[in-house]
Length: 171
Image (cartoon, rainbow, N blue to C red):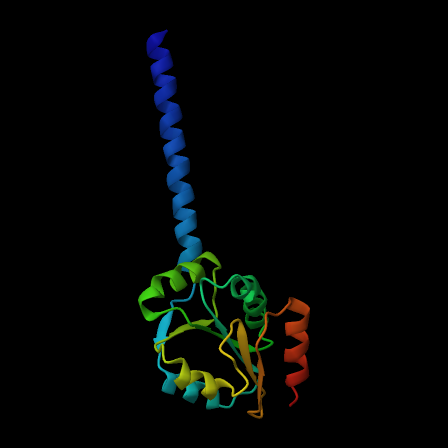
């Protein structure tokens, strides 16, 4: 009877280990589909913003420690997935904290292009994005197909974000 109990216990442990391993593999696969966070210079970001396109371009400025930023990320991601706009995430985490930004991107399964601004000189990049920007985040720069810029220093709700993009699509 004792041997039967030991065999049952061993089978249960092996079954549990298989489940844990399978769960781990699933988590790795989900994160593996996320975009890789790449460093970008202020100059390269300026050039990217200046490029004209066929649709609205959206540059969302965020940080891994910013709750409202993280909350709105799925709305921007859905916008990009639906091809309503070309969304680019720009992390303002410190370059040495790139791993934190990458973890969040993986957790959220973000597919949109994602960069980490390789500058901590706020006086250099804030006025280049918008003279109206105080530096607070979340912040978003919209660029219409004609190249006109629209800046918002606020968190977006999904419907409001969709409305802004829709209104800029023909401008």
